[in-house]
Image 1 (cartoon, rainbow, N blue to C red):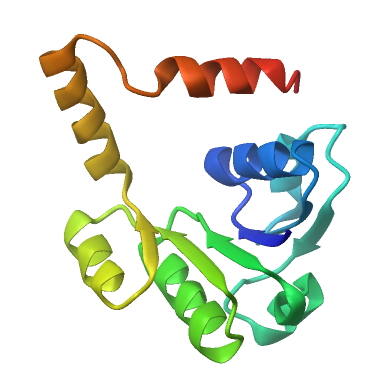
Image 2 (image 1 turned 30 degrees about the vertical axis):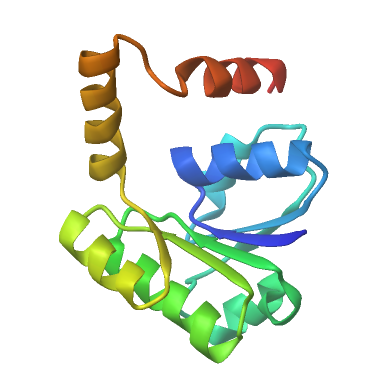
Length: 150
């Protein structure tokens, strides 16, 4: 897959390393070049410095030919806007965005945008742990991360 990830913070850099490790073509876009240090020395994907709301930046990142666009910056508004641009302007097949506000995440999900909402996911995991006595995915994802040897 040809993947563009907007945001090279903890979530974006971890996702980029995982997808690159799995053999995908990965491009990471961030406002500052300093953020790319989180990718580590083994990451050989493309890095683009710029604002993901700028069409020139998105085109430099290869949005016209990407299969997946993921926006995981710290800002809900930037994530929502870039997800809409990817979906509605560039017709990217798979668009996923991180939205921290559960109400907004649900509203955009109803509009057809795949949303990831950390407060909703974390509260569900805690509930499951309290009622079932185990984290449903902890072992799978922690072991996967360790095995990547990043």
